[in-house]
Length: 181
Image (cartoon, rainbow, N blue to C red; front, side, top):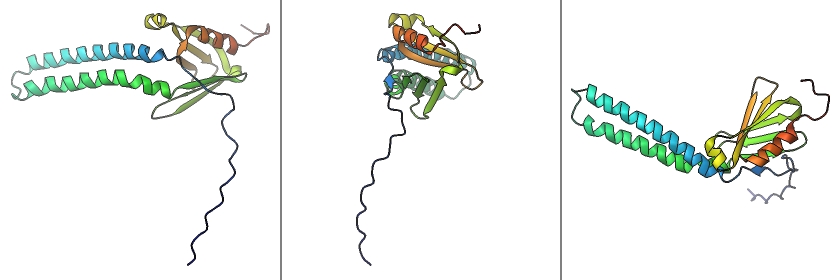
């Protein structure tokens, strides 16, 4: 049997992706998400600690080893929440991008499960730009797009610089005097 000859390299295929580059969120979204994740972790940890404390007071005849095991399980749970609140935002930031063009907006998100959402300008009903108290501190905002449809009727893009979110809103809103509202 003769050895196989190496194949010639194929010509590169045309890219399937549009030529316009995707933009990243504002990097200040990482500390913002760490703060909100830390607040969530603290509230859930405190609530679970109260639950374990009540359980320990009510369950008097529990085996002796559970007096040590329950606080250790709580400590492991609270530590995991705190670790996740710190480590997740940079990964989510790396996997979130968007592109705005004359046709509409495309948003790509997802670390494990990738989601691509396209919102054509013709489907946009109205757009809000919101800011919570922590977002205001970091001068960030959330672009909320409401569409004519049932699936993804409300699309949110968090972590935009507030001025940028306002400019995207103005770009995506239908223009002209023929609007019927």
